[in-house]
Amino acid sequence: MEATKEKQRLVNGVRVDDLFETIDAIKETPAVAKSKFRATNKWIRGGHNRTTINDFFAAQEEREHKDTFELEADEPQLLLGEDLGPNPVEYLLTGLAACMTTGLVYHAAAKGIELRGVESRLEGDIDLQGFLGISPDVAVGYENIRVHFKIDADISDEQKEELIEMAQKYSPVFNTVLNATPVTVKLDK
Amino acid sequence: MEATKEKQRLVNGVRVDDLFETIDAIKETPAVAKSKFRATNKWIRGGHNRTTINDFFAAQEEREHKDTFELEADEPQLLLGEDLGPNPVEYLLTGLAACMTTGLVYHAAAKGIELRGVESRLEGDIDLQGFLGISPDVAVGYENIRVHFKIDADISDEQKEELIEMAQKYSPVFNTVLNATPVTVKLDK
Image 1 (cartoon, helix red, strand yellow):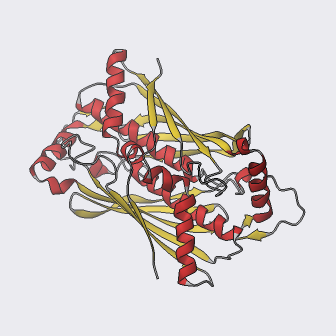
Image 2 (spheres, rainbow over the protein chains, first blue to last red; image 1 turned 120 degrees about the vertical axis):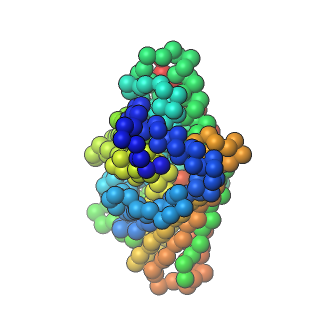
Image 3 (cartoon, rainbow over the protein chains, first blue to last red; image 1 turned 90 degrees about the horizontal axis):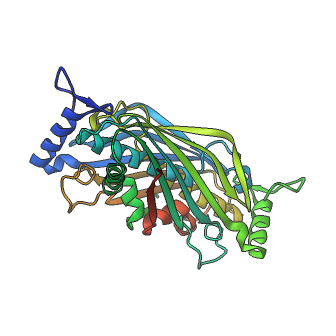
């Protein structure tokens, strides 16, 4: 999990010896895999709010990122904001793009497939009648999301398709979106 | 939709006259509500990749944000990255927090409820056996997500609970996560 070898094999910038050590450690003690990720958010004004990312739980311990990350969200003027950051549904696409890419790159590394480039473009449809409470018959969330990948590597199109299959199979954000995921919401009193 | 009045009523920083105009415009022409949000992502190295947010389609026209937003994602060292940004599943929480907050604030504004503060903390459980392909019986995505809201306003706890209900009912990201949302993934050749 942490680098323990003098000479790590790097494939796609992924420390593959550590990757296989992590997999072995989890196979031996599955509880090591239980993780908790967190965010705190503070409303600023109108559509503007700020999310802070710092601590998480992984490998049976509380952890902290090297830095505290702050992310501004806002709505464009058309949607009554000041456009000081991406909007929330764009953050969802960001998580989805990043996660599928990481899944693809890590699983390629595990298979020893060297990549030169991975690019993706995502687009999702939202009917704002849902958000605005105009029509109960309209989906409030994304009606659907389309993802297009471009992979630069010395492999066949068939192998590229396999990588994309893996990105879908093993991406936590993809699977959170694709499947119904329970979210419980409570008021702190 | 765009500011047209000299004196806008502002509630919680939300231009409520524009909000009601938007609602009226959509009621008259529901196609105005059809929106497309987009992201492009470029892999950099290992768990590090960058998402760019710029254009979107709304109110029947192609639009651009005031600025182009760039978001770095990475994994912490423990998860074999360099920790240069939040990780993808933290971006998902960011979108969820931001979206529920905006839903809460806008709907409060529409009802004339003035807020002093809204804060939330989110936590979600992921078993990395899914991502690592160790066990097919384990969910790959978030097993569940918990959201806690703190609302500062001169309203009763009951009214605060109602605001939280609205945040859930009208948040696109919340509903994208809670419900199964189709995602189609293709290789560009």
